[in-house]
Image (tube, rainbow, N blue to C red):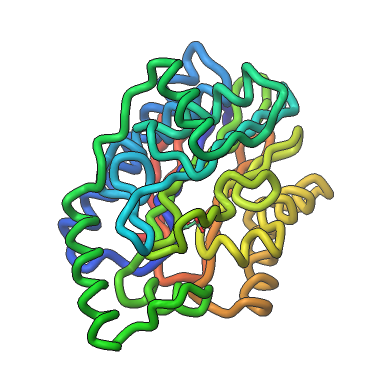
Length: 309
Ligand code: ASP
């Protein structure tokens, strides 16, 4: 397969309710692939995944950056992580509220600190000090969804208590997911992964999912990279991204091993729980999921393909 190449996803979940929403998601996915391939002209796999995820975060229609979902109290908190094989490093932020693009702050942690994960208020102050653009606040679409959910909780139709099983129910009812991610390989055959999210809808305040956790929501090492999406608690317990890339390192074909690992995940946690995209150092990419849909796309020189809608 040709390199550079990139794959992006827009979250594992339910199919969009209407054709317009499907079209909007597919347009955002192709815009992100375009941004990633443009970055490849002069940049690295790290530039490719960050530029692609910025587009997804800025779309407002996905659960990351501007369009992030809310917790039980109705406020936004976001998690993001990025990893790059050439530096052999990861950088991540969790429970941040300030930046419009948490992925940019995660990249800063990767490139400019000795740490892997910086969280909460301190991370927000760092974003502010760096002059990063500020998050615009809860999106109208999300605010409406929150109000609707509150009514259902008050009517006793939905349990309020947070636990992973209720997330599966939410996923079915509201088609949630919409977390975003990218994996890429550059012309030096170095790979990178990036994942960004507003977390799961109606999470407990302070909850952090898999997206910023190296080995869970993302992983990149010399043989390949992965970005995961779905119920974060399960993904962390399974070390999903680490597992799939490890098998690619053992010589497995990305499509075969990602489907295999997804099957094992489903056997343990049930259907409607997760998805992932993977890429290897030769540019072979695949998206595997056990939900109704997971919009994802792949691009390399002169090729752009959208799947999973
Ligand atoms: N994995 C994300 C989290 O648990 C949510 C998602 O992918 O939809 O925070």
